[in-house]
Length: 289
Length: 152
View: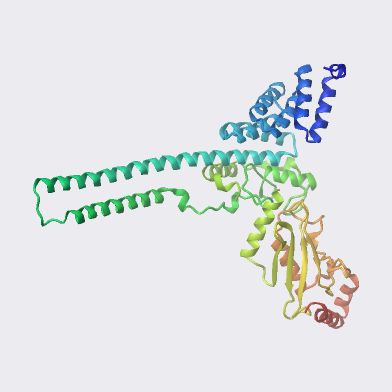
């Protein structure tokens, strides 16, 4: 190791890492942050910075490790929770991601962070992924049940055909048209199986439910479903990150232009509950609606 | 990113529920921030029989910042700047009075309404506004002439 590096402080190494990061040199940035951590393992921003680089390098397990270290050093490290949630989504672990995303969102709101909207989107992304997973499981379950029942119908018809052939063998009679009787049995089985498929399709609520998010769950600025609705003095509800974005630019009510500040906002708990329940059942498509 | 989502929705909503006398669509596929708008001159107004094209431009910060409307067809109107920009000055489009819950279709409705009835109290061309108030016949004559000359 050249002496100059030994003399560099953790802060200097961090700055060097930041420079590599800005230039898109992820590998060198990762190296600098690691050297900085080797000197000073108590600075949580070194871990969040390295987590961001490792996100770029698609090393999601390492991202989660660094985020955990950052959170252990600083319970309010919003970025740590935020990036952990993103990495967990990449690893298709939506339920774990959701826990981190919720905490990140609460911290972002408390810190009046500009990232609140992005964090809220990660919450939705995790919900969407979780919904899709559950939906896939449900379809697989339904499909295996349908398969089993179709198998029963098939076996039943085969048994009937076998009986018929045995009867014919025991007491042959030229009168009976064996082949056409068998054809009838097969046709009955086919109709039964079609009917089964129809019944299962009708039992699938997703097929028959209209895919629409009701207006009262939609934020009237972002036109997206709300996750954290707050109510203004005139009784209108908006999604918290969206109206905070607006209030950062103009301290006015978005509808009446009367003076309005963040401290005037009150959570709309009942509406929040309705939105959460709606997402629980429909997140797979409602997030992008 | 959230701007694109909202604008895309507004475009779909507008196609399903168009404003009478207004047609609008993207100027080019893939760029939701620029719309082409066509207003037809309302019956009984000096703009009757004319077809006016406008550019609607949405800022990247939409809907937190207002859209801008510019006539590309020359028009003699108190609320449209008589220059190469043809800016339409609507009260609701000023950044100090813009409301983020206001939709593009409401903006276009307002624009169409202004052709029917100019708003002289909120005029950008004060001399045309004065003429409109004090000698409506002469205003109508010029407006009609310009419509025939530029908007047909």
